[in-house]
Length: 250
View 1 (cartoon, rainbow, N blue to C red):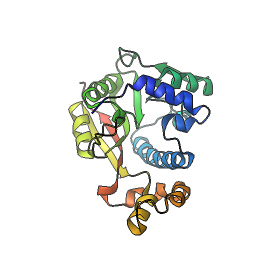
View 2: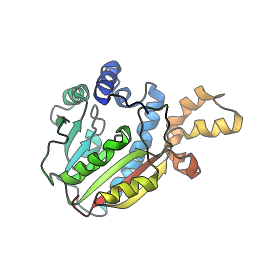
View 3: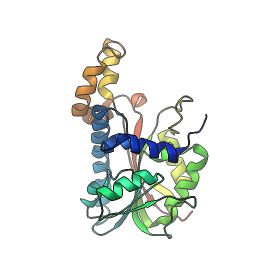
View 4: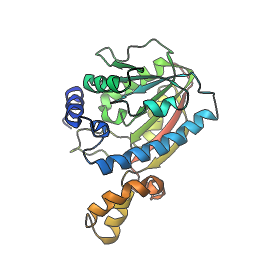
């Protein structure tokens, strides 16, 4: 697989998207992005319920790893969390800083995550690690372990697609392999749930033929896909939300 160069890729995507902040980090279609946003937020709310059952989040420090243009600032702050965002893309960080001047944003440099050990109570990374080449994923997860406090929480939303040699942007794992990888880096899994982004299109394709109602499914997907994505057979689900807790230093 030919590897893409992530920093210029995401810098250019942010510049090209302009004021369409979801397009900067997702797709170019507003309807599809609305769908992705609702699905991610629905699962993230469920993930945070797991945290709330275990700890008081008020005033706790959260790192948004791969913060993009700041999509999650308000979401995390609504839980009373003290927000910090980091991203590889300087253009993403510039946009996020302009949108949320009272939040802290930093760029990832060659040295990685420039925070001391045990700096955060929670780390959340939404659709980021599966964009990191396989040979670099382990080092990233090790860094997330380093900056998390003992018994701190890690929330991930990642791809469980089958690896596609034509897709230079995604480096997915099965849900089992995600769990094994995190376990090897000192984490225990507390919760997991699968879903897929475009359930309506998948169902219509199977009933009436591929892409015959693509325009229709694009319009109605944002209204219903976030409810039915997890109901499809497991073999058709392509994304996973997971909550882990740090139990060992690695």
